[in-house]
Structures are given as C-alpha cells and as structure tokens.
Length: 366
Image (tube, rainbow, N blue to C red; front, side):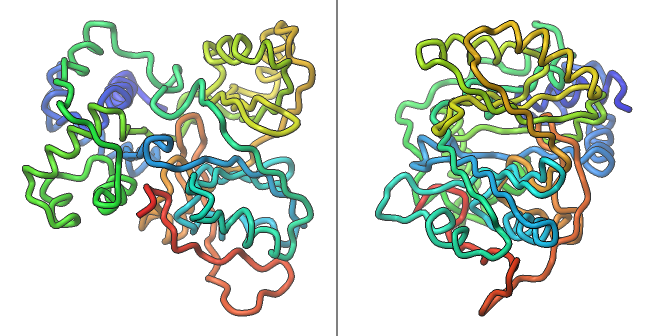
C-alpha cells in the first residue's frame, strides 16, 4: 500500500507532471534523491506513469467511446489488437469478458476518414454487436484528476507547485510539426529536454519554448497513470445513463463532484451520459448507486457495466513494458492488469481474428 510520501508524490505529479524532483522535494520537505527513488519504485511496483497528451479539440480530433460485444473465444484477441493500435486508449474488458470498451481517436475532418469505425471493425470476425458514442463534452477526466488520488497536499503546497507561469504571447494549436514531440510525450511525459531534442531534431531551447507554448494554451496536458488498487479500489464500473436533455448539464456537473467517479462525459447515443465509478467493493458500489446516483431524479435509466480488466490506459502510445507482456498499467482510477499481446494478424483474417494496426497515430493529424 501507499504511504503518505507516495501519495504526496503522486498528488504533486497530478499538479505538474514535469516538475523537477528538486522542486517536488522542496515542497514535500524531503531530499531530491528520496523523491527520485520513490518515483522509480512507484513506476516499477505501482504502474506509475506520467504521459503528455494533446487536447483532442485543439488537435483537431474527435473521441469515440466504442462498445464491442464479441464471442468468448475472440474477445481477448480483439481487445489485444485494439491495444496495439496507436489511435486507441482506455481499452477495457467489461461485462463478463465478452464486451470491450475503448476510446478511439479519429480526425474530426470527415475527409481524413475514420478507418477503424467505418472499415476495420465492421468486417472483423467474432464481433456480434457494435455501438459508437461520440464524446461531446468531458465534465471530469482529462486534465481533471480523480480526487482520491490527489487529496494529500494542502492548498499552500499545491500553489507552490503550480507557480505563476507566464502565458505565451502567441499560442498555436498542436500541428504537424509537433507530431514527434507529442509522440515522445505520450510515451513518457517526463522525458528530458535533451531526449525530446533528439527525437524532434530541434534544439533544447526550441523544445522548451514550444512545450511552454503548448502548456500555456492548454494544447497539451499531463496525466498520471497509477494502480487505483493501491488507493483501496477493487470494484470498477462504467455507468451508462439516459438523462432528460434539459437536465443533462446539471446532472453531469453534480456527478463530476462525486469522489467515487473518475470520468464523466456527455455522449451521443441512446444513453447520453457516461461515467466511471471506482469503489472499494461491490457493496460500496451498490451504496453509491442507490444513495447518490439514485437521488438524481433526472436520470431516467441506468446501465452498470463491470470493468474486469484495463488493458490500456490514457496514452495511445504503447510502452516497451506493455509490448513485453504487461499490456496496460492503471490509468487514473484504473487498476493495472497483466495481459498477453498476441501476434499481428495479416492477410485474410480467420473468424475472430484481430483488427489490423492503424498507421494513423493517436495524435494531431499531419
């Protein structure tokens, strides 16, 4: 389990994922060596990972939450294939292991095509049902943290970590020239400026200036992925809700204030609101649904889908650790899990064969 210093370090990274260990150490009242040692241990033992992600709207991308129902024998192969694609994140096995949910990042421009939605999924054997829900507005998630993983530091410590950054004079949206920078940050949000300079071919000064511009304009944010089981979470569920349109904003805002939730978003489809609940155990989930969610009269219907395993978290990038067998670590509010990545299927696919890999990365279109 996490001790107070572990929790404080995780909270500090939520506030500024690229804060130097020396600055974090000064706020926490320990040495920089202690912070670095704890960070390395949490990466190894708790799946801790800081990732830099482009804001999808500023990057010209649309996010789709897709639900796939598959046959029992093909579900894990299909899920593993979705994990390997660079245009997916948050890949989960739900509802007894025969349903897969995933976020797909697609170009907003229709001319660019949504190959996974329109071509690859419909012709994949083993899939028995598909529904796609466009994420219209996120009320909780993305830059907003799950509260129970970010409640250790006091207001003064938080302010010291945030500082007062100067806004950029001219803030540009992420563009084609930023592709290499964003791809590197998706793998490791704490990559040093020297490493980012080698990847992009820019000077370290140019990297620092462009990263500051993107951060000042909220073009990129830093997420913290960590095993939520270490915070006492052992039951996870997706909540699919139908809410009267006139009450959608009020209900979503109320849900976003619940400590039990790590994600709340408005979507298209027969259910227009989706959330992710993180609870101690099934009894805790039952209490939350009946007492807190049940108190919101505007919610007309509620479907609860248990999350069995999270195979891929917030970042579209697949780490070397994941390629080696551990498919995904925990994202915010997700328990880490191990999984086996099967080999890539090419040519004619047998029934239940996996989806082909996409060449379009989950980053701004070029």
